[in-house]
Length: 202
Image (cartoon, rainbow, N blue to C red; front, side, top):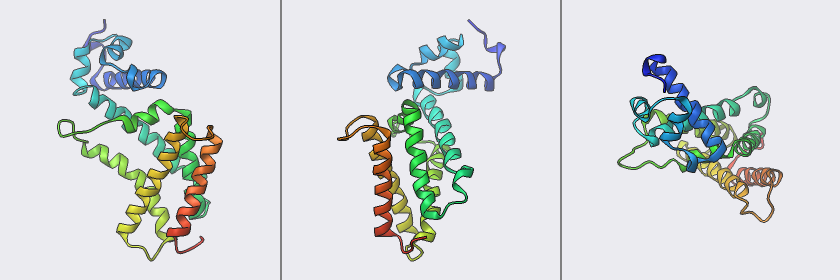
């Protein structure tokens, strides 16, 4: 069993997160426990509680990593030379591909529950809001007559719709299963959403 002096606080934090992510990738949230994580890194459960408040706190930090990875993909170079409408479609494709490539970590974002006893940290809210901001910035030039409130609401609605299609596909609750069908539905959703909301065909 390792001693805390063997690694720095930051090193132990990264070790815990890496081990926890590996468990989630293989077994999902149901397979995650503080005992499994600390066993895998050779430390005691007490050491984990010196770094994270509890298992919920650990899950939130795992999700922050996942959201940051997704954000980097959504803002990557392959979207820069496209029209705003094309970029929205590309975001949908990236999101679906991300979810299918790493379903357990993707699903963990939505399985993380916050309450009065475990409120969502302010820093984590920023991780979530930056996802919606990407969509808002693309919708603004497509719907210049819409108010800020309408743009914000539209971005949330569209993103929620893409998520809904994705989760139904991954859990095989659609009539036809498979990623390609989910990609088609997402494209259909975005096309028809823009027809009703946008003012331009840019």
